[in-house]
Length: 144
Image 1 (spheres, one colour):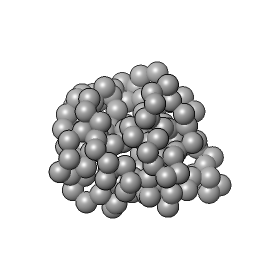
Image 2 (spheres, rainbow, N blue to C red):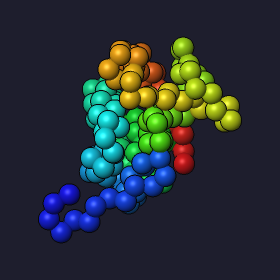
Image 3 (cartoon, rainbow, N blue to C red):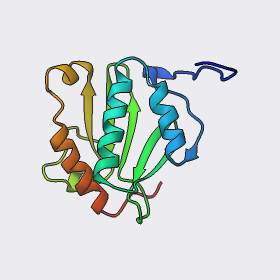
Image 4 (cartoon, rainbow, N blue to C red):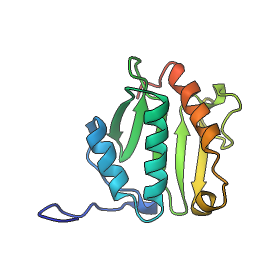
């Protein structure tokens, strides 16, 4: 980073440590601090969500970006950097059709893990992800 801004600390797995905050600014700060190829994943996910859910609510909580329906309460999606992938958590993912493939210990949550090679080999189905985002935004959000 430039100027008098201190570099963002990366936590385990390369997850940026970003202060809690509401709005696009903290989410963009998180994405900008995502290390290496993970930044591209964050940018693509953020663009898909913004395109599919006009007026989406955004925030950073617990060092992760959260996305919520514009006029709803609660959240439908969160991201987190892991060592070898970016984890997208759909809070009501079990209700999506088809549900995202990653199981959870929580009954309603489903995950999508996005690995670096899935960006180059077509392994990340952006159309399916966009469909999940539309479906998730239409459900009642998770209150955290």
